[in-house]
Image (cartoon, rainbow over all chains, first blue to last red; front, side):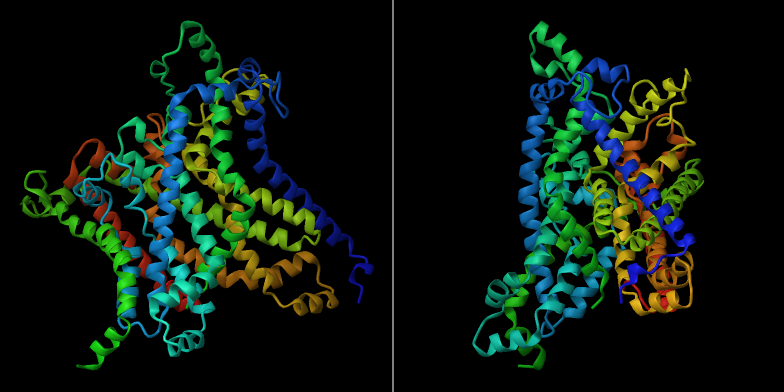
Length: 299
Length: 302
């Protein structure tokens, strides 16, 4: 039956038109602030300050991006964040799989006990200060480990991975492997991990985007600028309006030049820091949605 | 050798695999729970968690009688209830609207654009709001000047605006992502229902109210009830960044207060007491909401 041949009643067409308009408005109001920042970052400092930028860059220039290169903490922050993200993601995903795999196995004695312990950790926490004191007593304060290690284990990720394993690795497969003399660890490495690429992709993306974007642990555990991840540097520039020019050792005329660029720094730095994540965006979009769906299904 | 030991020995490798993540769980989730006893002690670093002198309920008495008690509870609830309601409603609206759209390219474009802000960090989000809502430069200032208004009120520093700033920036950032679950529920609706409705002469709006909304009602109820459990656990990150001296009267919530008293003023015992109060109430709320979800909808967290 060709449904499109039937003309829709006028009320329906009006309703549909209304939806198209509303959705377009929603789309525009979400995209516009981002376009505004992007265009401003390529405009001249004067155009931005006098409010001439609406949609396209005005007096296009790259001086905002020059300022990013001149401001040394951004480079350090970038490198720090990259290191924290890569190491943190490797650790976090490994821990998640190592916890989720035994919990997904029916033959694992004590499974209920472990699951109960896991769930309780999601419901109750010791709070900020006890957490801080534990990290402190491990001697991690003011080291990169304070950013990578304490937040590596994530209960919710474990539950998602466990659900995925249970749904996608049939018991028969395990029994067959066992008859062939395959050990539990070998089964994990040779069967479970290769069969679980979609959920591993979800875990990697969650963890990577999460650690790239977070600032809380760095705020409480670090007080050396050299160790700051990008997000804390961003906080100084964007939220605290604190651009430290003393540390830059600029010649007097460069100093003057930078003074002009400083206004643009806010715009360009937003673009520069969000680009790595947006680069992952097409992948992320696909796998994040998948992750939400897995997470929403219970046993 | 009894049966249990046999079972364990047979799969000893599984215990080997789980040992490391389990050690992390114990170290960073359970050992801090032992630390809550600081709330009942006069903590000093020399004597430590286990040997500082007991002080009973003193810290809790301080907290309940302090002038901050009422306001920070009120602020926490105001911000979280407000953002829960507008967040849920906008996600439902977006899902239903997208579900009606048959033009795939348009639908996909809207979805792509609405997901995007989810990947932006909180710091960038707040920086963006700072820039755009600046009364001097920024879009807000630009529009004001265009309309010939000289002195615009400062939104970012206004106590009245804070709950709305928090909630609507959340809508901007998370609606696309929040709509995913509802869209999935809608895609599970049997197409025959729409066809039958069509034959009976139902309009599109009637289909939304008679088919779509009932179809996602269980999802709505479960998600809504479960988020009641998280009302007091509202995140620190965005509130802390949006907070300034001017809007503190509405933006000071439990988690920012715990941070300030504990890590800025180093008043550990008091901070732990406030944090413990928060954890206990949060725990009770989650248990109640989980129970309600189970009762009303037969689905629950655990």
